[in-house]
Image 1 (cartoon, rainbow, N blue to C red):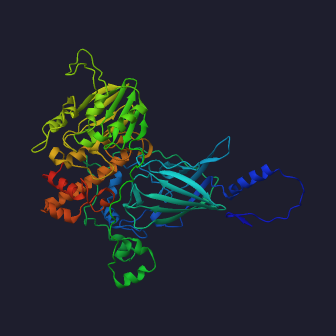
Image 2: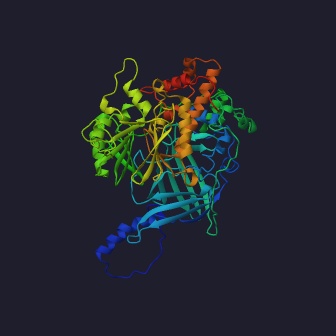
Image 3: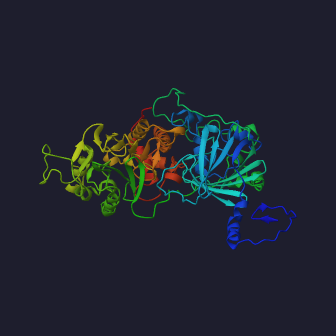
Length: 607
């Protein structure tokens, strides 16, 4: 007979008559579903009979067979140059969870069990290549909120369905669907089914990506039980592999990749078929090829955006040490709290002040001592006046103040260009209210504080998002607050009217990468709080830097060839990134970004 997928043999038994208490019968009934589970733990050796050429020698350039990608994914893959993997940011990058089982993937699985209840808490997996380690939570915990950090392995939860373990994974970093440049976005979800048949283990994994796939991508992988297996450590150290000027991101300009047709010629395949797309995955496509060699490819989808947090207006997330990230007040707010008081990076929209103050009180009863403005925009500094009034400056007789008490109100610090922009905003624009102005400005490249037993360095990247940007580095906590120099919600806002430029933006992103130290596998280490969006680390900034640099290079090439700004817009130099970062409306559309890049490129950019 079978019970929820488990086979129970029918063996004759001798009947013994005795009485069983009802409570024991209830316990047996409750525990019965556990017999449906199988043991996945142990050592498993990878089998490569399936998709061997793709998985071990590696996929060819231009091989998109079997992938339901859209036009945006295809253009990104066409532009990919394998030399990008020699960048220091990518040398120790591991495969993500949705690709890690495809390469050298000898596998170890073990589990955590609660001693008192004997309930399964989690499975853990270790994959040979780059020592990928992953936790699959089995205790019913929810997935993190939208503003939580993303990792290569994502956040996984599992449930048993008969003999099959079903796992859902979210919160991935951006990575690849195939390691020849075919992208997979950070908004993807992975669904897995782990199934054991005796000494064989099968994994069915399904990737759903609203950015780059038109339908789910499904693949399977197999292992054989190998109790004698030994997996060696996999250390990785970054080295100077290629001599190149700082700031170069290897890539091919659109239409300039000379290797894209080699795969089709090598295997005598129709070019249209190897370009991928959902319609090329099914047997019916043979009739399409016969009648129309240049098959239609699906159009790129409308831009997909990160999910927004719709719960309390202000969401508080502890980052590390005594540093917190507050989202929902307009721009993100960074908060450092300790015995000396509270330091804020930015103050949010003015209408969110009450909610911001309430969130601060939940974290600290100490006075607000400092507010550091990252730039001039009101979604970041609108709360200056009201929040500063609730604070108290660390000051004495050597400090003069127009108020009756030199200690009244928090110190509001910003680069001097912020003060200049607020007091003289330009023709036809009113000056900012006096209470919004910083009362302590600095000049030059940086300003240092020592507060709450921590060095706090304020860094000014010139002419980036604006000409008054500040980034704040909490050295002991190892957290950087970037303001709008870096965001995860759209293309960078290059505010030309306030001194911003595309080259300054790229320089600032590289400056962030020069300040960070990552932990193992290019993950963790220094945490980064963006001006808008989720908590990040260096890899997220590196992907963003790559994207902005590639778009800059494309627009510069078009401008050198004499194209007007309208012709550049029509050529869609951002097409492959639009589904994730673009916008067709709102205060900062894709066309506005392209125009800002075009206008700020006055000639050759430094390489």
